Image (cartoon, rainbow, N blue to C red; front, side, top):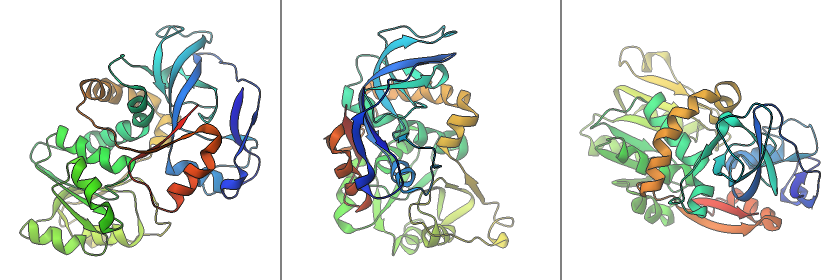
Length: 322
């Protein structure tokens, strides 16, 4: 099969489009013929060695849409030919990928190919962050950092679906305001001035939930506009900076700082994603979530997709056609 592999860490130039052996499914696994996949910021970290280990060759890619081609031993709830989204274990920048039965989810025909390719990471993650980790309640307010990106635009919509009364967003430049507003954000700011503006708009109360994938100074500034009993959910480190919190910022105000990793959950507690799928897939089928797609590339041009994300020029999800 054709796949994109890396045999060393480095820039986009290390991505090689080449012929490799087709993987085979093991116990309670399926082989999926990949139709489309997406590029996530974690792929950049894996390519550069900031996240992945050096067990080369490596096929990148965290999610996919395709059809089941082969069942491994012990698979009981899936069938050959079924249309699915999945989080594969062998990497999705390839014509075929292997995924655990637990991390493979059938989807109805109502979900288009592009939406299905763009949605697994961003939709499942947004639901888990808000519903399970952030424990959102109807009428609460939410701040979504990086609100013009794939996760951000989806999280803004998910917050409204789950009952948020008001959703704020932050972006890296004013040119991205439009994308966040179109996703449903009520107010959008740059990272430079969000905290003071939110306090002014909330009469000094702050917001109930903050979704933070930035870290560093953005995380620190977030504490000043987090309401009493509020929850800051930290799920990424795209700034590559370290943020610091003081213990006296938490106990007296009953505020919480919480962490979540979808990647770690897929590896160690995959069963937790079943409940998310039961809600997310109907949202997608009904069109309740409008997954924002910023660009699409053929698989052999994946290096260009990586450059676009690294330069912070993209909005929404970046897709790869396999």
